[in-house]
Structures are given as structure tokens and as C-alpha cells.
Length: 547
Image (cartoon, rainbow, N blue to C red; front, side):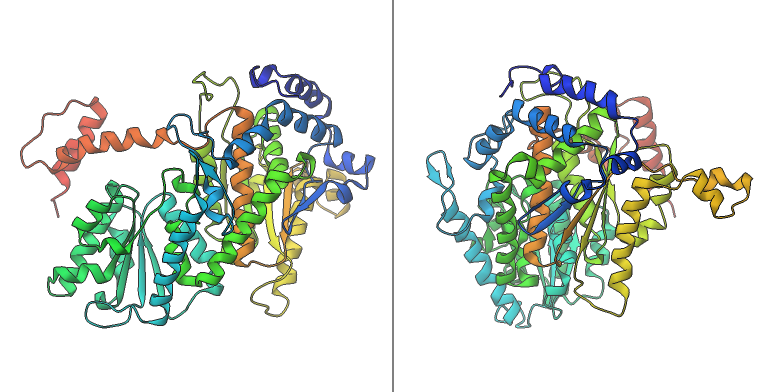
């Protein structure tokens, strides 16, 4: 029963969870498994080909029941339906949130403002496919008649993190005759290194900016334009053969020198961090081909269906979102670690950082009231065994509680000897060690000297999820991304915050626009900042031209 008119911390399930937390917070996972040895066999769920083991969490069946009750009282199902049906749930920007339409199959219907948006999505996907095929088969030629061999994606935020992550994740499926590089940082080094060693006659730039005015992206785009023209003798007509745009601003795109026919549009109901499966994914489609890109979209769609239809107690994104709330709001854990045991997923934690923290780093509810509970845990992580030899020390023996998501695959794309068995053994061993630790008695039994015993004790009782899939394919990647998208949405729905705006990124950018002319001014500018900022500006101006 919904009690959405009540603040979250006043709802019956929340109050019951507070009492429940006090009752079980000191119970150790060793004890929970001793009381219920079979919990590993039923505290798990499967959906869309993804298996989730959540038994090594500090929960019992009653915890899950109460968390599900909290979701029901918070109207989570109605929030889900509102998103999928095109309601304008991004209330601060009066926009629908329809990234789910980007992966809806051809012929399906998602209505917004009385219009089915799916046909226009597939119109752009078809246009992307045609262009990708031309690049991949060599029929698209640069200005001098040479084949395109280098693709550089210029964007920032979701226009960079998504394509860069997906390229690395799906490199196994990519055309190795093509080079892909990504530029996002306004630091000139990023651009310089991206074009280092490349021939302008063989290079295509994809400039991704909805308005085609984003400062960082357009600064890099104009630098790319100058680099190209320098390499092609200043011939302005060459721009049209070496640049395409992902944008909605036809006039500015055309003024830049890009043929409007080579502009790929997307829509204001697609947020940047949810845009990989829109035209923002053009570089991904060129890399892996249209067929694999559509497989990626199908993976998204399968997880979308699971999220929309599965009962909460067996719903993977819902369960993960509820567990995140359990640790964030009751155990006061401030971070979540995402630990993929798959080399190709090396950029996945960075991608999730934007998805989770830009979405849920909010301090007011949908109606503008200040929240009275914590939101937005910090997401971080690194790949597999590399991280075991860096920050796992803190997770195992530090003073902070860090819930972990382990991600692994039953089969490897690159079978080499014993490598994969050893890799997976580490996944299972780490979750086991985090859960159960090693007692002082066990340490002593190893013959450890008395003075050294405290240093070798592992307290355990550190929670984790283990996510297993068959192998990393395009459709599996789509499922994993959608899993976390809907996990983040679940958290936001219960906290009653808007996961789809990002006003917090604007202030610093506005202030930068004031400071840029002060740094570039030939004459000494009159400064009206605080004393620290004024001093820093003067220090920089004094020294920037010194050798």
C-alpha cells in the first residue's frame, strides 16, 4: 500500500526497518550462515540471463520483506510505469525520461505527448547503420580520397564516458582495422595525445554536443578543425568529409562546416548519462557493427522488461537498489565498490560513477524540500585482481564499511590455460573472505606469533553481491548497464529525488566563463572574487608566460 504522502522516514516500513536494524546489526554473517546454512541457495535471483547472489549481505528474509514493503509504500511500481509510459518525471526540466525508448524493438509503441517516439528512434538507428557500414567497408572516403582509418569521438560527460566505456568493453568485437580514440578533457594534452601519430586524411571526428555549444566539447572540436585544415592545406571543404555531428542544433552544425545530412539527432528526453544507446553510440556502432549494436540494444531491452514486470522480491535492479538503501541509510555506509573481474570492463566503474552520482547526488526532494536522510552513495572501483593488490586492504581490514558488487563471467572471451579458473577463484574467494573473515583463533592455529595475531585477523562481516553472466557479449553489456540504470532509479524513487537533472554541474561552469577572460586579458583585469580566487588568478597570470 502506497503511503507516498508521508516523508520516507515516516513510513511504516521505514520505522520497522529502524527497529529491525537495531535487532540484527551486530549479527555476523558467520552466525547468519550457521543459523540458515541454505541461505546461499535461495537468497539469489535471476533475470534476463544475469544471476545475482545476495546471500552474503547483512540481511535475513525479514529484511528483504521490509525493504520490499518500503518500495511498495513509496510507490515504486507507479514510478516505474510513469517512466516507461512517457510521463514527465524530470520535474525540474519538465521532461519525460525515455532512455527505455532507445532500445524498444521496431514496431513497439511508447507514447509521449500523444506521439509514438519509437519510429523516430529507429529512423536514426537506420541512419547510423548506413553510415557505419560506409565507414567499415571503406566506401566513405576522406577529402583526398583515402579511406577513413581513425575515428575520434569528441564529447564530455555521457557523450564520452558511455562510448569510451563501451568501446573498451566490446573491443573483442571491434574492427581492428580501425583506430578509436576519445577526447573529453579541456586539457590540451588530451587532444594532443589523441591525434598523435594520426594522418588527417584518414581521420574522422564525431562531435557530440546536443546544443553544439558545450564549452569543453566545442573547444576541442575547433582545435580538431584547425588540426585537420593544417594537414589538408587549409581547404575548408574538407571539414564536411572528416566531421559528423551528434546534435540537435542544425544551424550551428552547418556553420561549423558539417553537412546537415551527417548530423545525427537525439532528443531532450534522453539524459547524457543515459544516452549510449542513442546516436551518442555512433562510434560504438562503427566499432562493433550495426548487428552487434542492435544486440547491445536488445540486452538493454531484456533488462528493461525484467525491471518492469518482475516481482520486487525477484527483481534484480530493485533488490540491488533496496540493498544500497539498507547500507546507505541504516548502516551509514557512504560508498559502494564495483569490482569487475573482466579486463574489458576496465572503464565500467568510471561509467557508473557518473550514472550513480550525477543522478542521485541530490539534497532536495521532488517538491523542493530538504531531505532528512542520506542520498547518493559514492560509487568507485577497479578491475579484478589489480584492485586486490591496491585498495582491498581497506575493504578487508579498514574501519569503513564498503559494500561490494563483484561482476564475473562463466566463460572468457580469451581462453588461455588456467587463467580464467584462477580469475574466478579469486572472485569467489574474495566474497568469502569479506563475509567470514578469519578469527584470532584461526590465526593462532596457523602457528602465528602472539604479537602478530591482531595484524592478521580479518573481522569479516563485510557485505557483497556477486553478479554472474555467461560471457561478455554486446547483449550482456546492455543488460549490465540497464541493471545499474534501474538500480539507481530505484534508489531515487524511494528517496523521492529527481535522478534525471544535474544542476550541480552548472555553477562551476558559469563561474569559469567569468574567469576565462580575466586569465586571457592583455591588461590587468579588475577582480571581484574572494581573496583566494583573486590571488590564484594573479599567480597564474604572472607565471603563465614564464619559461
